[in-house]
Image 1 (cartoon, rainbow, N blue to C red):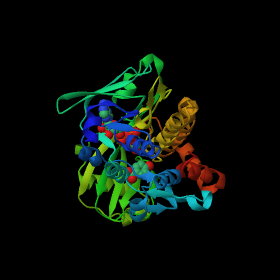
Image 2: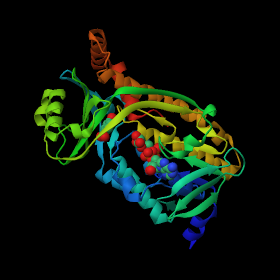
Image 3: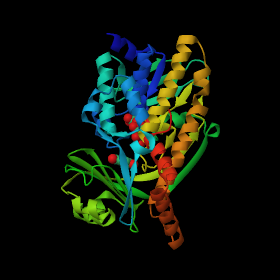
Image 4: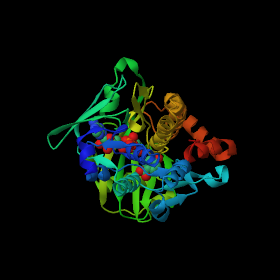
Length: 398
Ligand code: APR
Ligand code: PHB
């Protein structure tokens, strides 16, 4: 009954557009603060859960999921990693996160985080409208925003106090802001990542980020029996152009020898190419519309910051909404954009830096390659340099 009445209508405090990790965690945090919210998601629940994304959680993201009571399955099934390795033309350097920072990361797929958030929302009766078509945002430059959508051909409209645009890079929220009101900074990299998922134990217990003269490769995992591997490929490459055999051959060439020897191959259960991009649109607020997660910014996957940034954004935004409703103070929501952007730009810098260090660029000449090598040697020989990497990788303060 409540669901019908609220879906049909009429009014809530915050409309959240998008049921990715950003929108769902925001929904959870608002619910815990006693704030009423409706989530509108364009796709079906199953479609959202079928998307394959990265899965390395910073220490702060783990703490955040614990704080919202969603850590049981993560602690049971996630893999705690105390370090990772960088490789350069076969030479390997382990970065010991625990020794350098006292922190670890958690390998737990974004799909699993999303599923835990969806299950919790279903259990608590929070309203999520899946397959909400033609979402349109109205009036967010004034005091009375409204959000329209269609479900099964029927038009609905929800009045609200605020709209949270958590609808990813190609969503409607950022696109609804007048372009002149946004500053956009972007870098599109001249390559992509070809990813393969396989039901085989990973080639190594920890992640290996490998720079090779032929291009970058990454050895990662989802579980002790499911591995995730990536190869740098030209931007215009298609996954269909790569047979499984060609993928494994090329991966073996690029991984350091011990990992290449330990590589267990099998039929790929997913194979796709993702472009690499750095992107920030700022500010993160226009009137009563707030942007969070991929709706506002993209990082290249080197360093696995995308999911973590999305979670950090909405933690801050939820705090602002909580202060607004509990204390009548706008201080938190007024500070949101500038405060979140300071952290976002540091993650942009780190992701760009790791990408630059490890990839082969079309203009990487002999000088450029020697500079990359020198950077690797510096990381291998300097506790200060390795600590800077470990501190960023395990996560800057939320
Ligand atoms: N109306 C409603 N929902 C929409 C619309 C729309 N017009 N457009 C997009 N969406 C939905 C998408 O279907 C998706 O489920 O918004 C959701 C956005 O989720 P994500 O793309 O996962 O973005 P976010 O929640 O910010 O999470 C960021 O995802 O892309 C990765 O690397 C990124 O790991 C990071 C994380
Ligand atoms: C992944 O496992 O998909 C993954 C891990 C680390 C990254 C990027 C992707 O930096």
